[in-house]
Image (tube, rainbow, N blue to C red; front, side):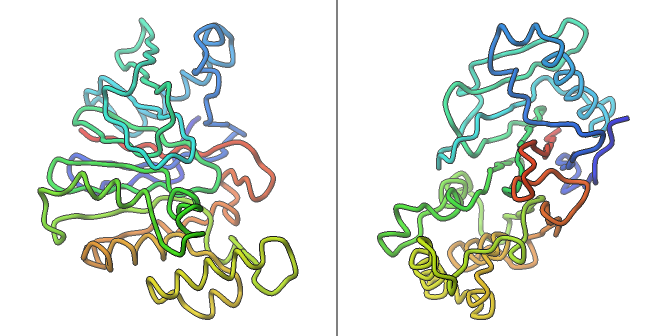
Length: 274
């Protein structure tokens, strides 16, 4: 039986659910990228799991499409026209849509669902009115490495926020779903290594930009949810109480897959807008 770790309604027409490693399921669905591989038993099983997960969360509500973006550390946002690969099943009304190109955020139209698959990276949902945008928040999409080398912060959050130019900051809300915690995501600043200098530079920039906690910096803890929240609050004046976090640490939670633990499978964050 497929069951989510949790399901939460963010609004009357927006729901998020997280599926982990129950029965050893891997939600990465790699075979759906290849039309020929879709004929294999494994691909069929993956498609059926997606259908069951959708039915668990959405019930009898009408959904026509589920988007599965091809994630690739790109600070770009996809709209429905970017989902060119369509996979359908005569026994089910929902069509799976995938992208040829890499995107790490998606605008989610009404009547659709989005599946974000990740090992330790967070999923961020921004929403206001009838607008919903979800992003795959890794370290490098949150903090562009090239920009960090130049002493500045460029983030996928900036790309996502541009979709809300017609909304006031006070009307925008955010939800951060499952990912590795700062306590588990260590970037050493004292141990001699090739990354020591780069890590110290990163924490200095975070401190200068957001007032990143000194105790976290000294321990080398890169707290992604903390950075997401402060970026939204300080740069875009979104209210602090409007930024929620499920506090799931994929590294320590036994119900989650975690790349940090050497588990290369992925969790599924399912977002339903209907």
